[in-house]
Image (cartoon, rainbow, N blue to C red; front, side, top):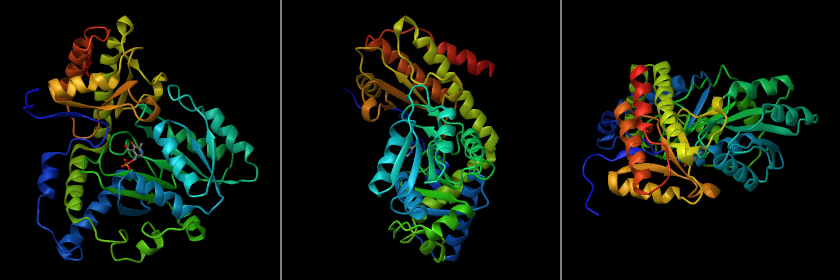
Length: 391
Ligand code: PLP
């Protein structure tokens, strides 16, 4: 295969495209993290993340990918033997649950069909049945990156309030922040887990948690062992985060990425993601003709606006399709995770993305379907263009 030329069209659901201005902002020599020039950048970037989270509460940041922030959320808030209620959404809710078990927590699950999504009636029932309030935290992945489905967070908050349940509300916003509407304080979220490499358009490796006052009170009593992620230790450091060295370059990038988000306007960012997602779905619905690949998520009002998962027809492998598309057209797509491996492919449409970038990726998918001999309806890209032209 000849060496690929031109820019790779990166349609992965994370990491995502890094804007050129963010790359340039990070391309600089090291600086002492106590240098006043850096502290100014650091403070501005932190304040920006709080605005994107829409919170006035606490923010702790880590040299770690999203898993580190998950670990911080559990170890800072809970004690051995505490129960947590995990709303099943897919691969990532399973992973968070497995981590909780690993820390000696009792994991209760509101089970769900990954294609349909969790039922809010089941969530209400699980909370109402817990009369003794053994459940100390409810864990929800806002946007399940593995399946392309989102969970309406205000409905979960309403279920907690209806049951008058005092559990902490923990949310993973790793693939929703800076892409889908997200309001930590208005939605009564106690701890939110976020990462650098998706809607914030940065390299992987920095993650963070927003923490409410209620969660800080729970933290004061929480007994799970922790050190590197300990919020009390962090709160006593001048940087209020990072037990070790601060990743200085990423903060120059973060200040720029927040500037880009605010220049566009958070509401416009959300609207752009919704538009690009709908165009992707229009294409996918056409491809589903002739017994072709179909949207994995079957609940229309839960379809994710940051990633679309598309289920291959029986007998066809999503990874083979992705390989063809990458090798022939230099387009990178996401694959199926865990038990979904090979069964689907995922189009990431979040972060620094516009119409022609998306259409390029969709065209490569449609060509790939032809090359691989996968049955499908023709004209998906046309349907996407039609929608985008009118939107
Ligand atoms: N949660 C969600 C929703 C994710 O999409 C991911 C990664 O893609 C994670 C958690 C894990 O984050 P990381 O891979 O940064 O550790």
